[in-house]
Amino acid sequence: MKYGRVYNFSAGPAMMPEEVLEDIAAEVLNYRGSGMSVMEMSHRSQVYQKILDDAEADLRKLMGIPENYKVLFVQGGGTVQFAMVPMNLMKNGVACYIETGVWSKKAIPEARRYGEVLVPASSADRQYSYIPDCSNLEIPENADYVYLCENETINGISWPSLPDTKGKTLVADQSSMFLSRPCDVSRYGLIWAGVQKNVGPAGMSVVIIREDLLRDDLPQYVPTYLRYKTHADNGSLYNTPNCWAIYCCGKVFRYLLDNGGLEAQAKRNEEKAAVLYDFLDGSEFFRATAEKNSRSLMNVRFVTPSQEEDAAVIAAAKAAGFENLKGHKSVGGLRASIYNAMPKAGVEALADFLRKYEKR
Ligand SMILES: *Cc1c(COP(=O)(O)O)cnc(C)c1O
Image (cartoon, rainbow, N blue to C red):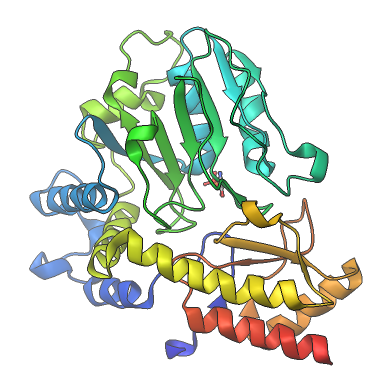
């Protein structure tokens, strides 16, 4: 790898495409003759407005976002969305949350501050190693929405297909699979994604929301900044946005468009993940923890026969230049996050390393 960079398997913040970083580096002191860096630029300037407009237009093109959806760039990262979703979408005060791992579990108590939360399906019985059957969920008539985490970053599982929400609004946390494959936005009421997993720098979420879900009748206590409508009415410029993150995300949107869009990216991701899962399936020492039809293509979780062996592999891998293979502290084991920007060569090198380690 150029510049002494390493294969970084971090779950987030995570790798960005090298070409994008080079492009950003070339513009960092003087953005296209403006005489200043994007970091130093007024968010009300014409130059910045174009960066913002282009980012939104490119994302719309990439995902095929219908006209009746707003694209918002909201500060505060993923955790803020755990609160914003119920604050903005609970009208009757009832929502259904599907519990599939650490991140959907975290969203539940946050939503309970604002109303009743029902859990019509869970995969807790087998340590969140699979997506439960959601073809016939018990969803009450007055439920405001059905919420899911489309890729559980920590548990390494992903939804093979969307649930039947019985006509209720579907809300998805796409943080760790955003832009990893084509997405039919019209099936969702709201999609949100913290960008530091698959797109850009930390501290911001992209929110894609159907216009009829933007409300004027929110409870008085909902802060101005935490109303989706505030951001929608002001084109994500109600206050100073995370200008730098939006600029970097825009670069990644353009990069994906220039490289065949989401179909091509999905193909690359499938090929990459297959390299690792095929190795794990054939191994007698390592074992993938996710059940086959729920496997994440972004976060590959695996274990050895013991915690001591896990730690030994992680240390040996680090010494060989494979960074951040330690599983999340809440679940242990190993995890290779192989988002869009991880080159196939990186995954092949890792599988090779693990194969040799097993032989030894
Ligand atoms: C990382 C992550 C979050 C939390 O994002 P923060 O920006 O750290 O608050 C939420 N959901 C998923 C699926 C994640 O991977």
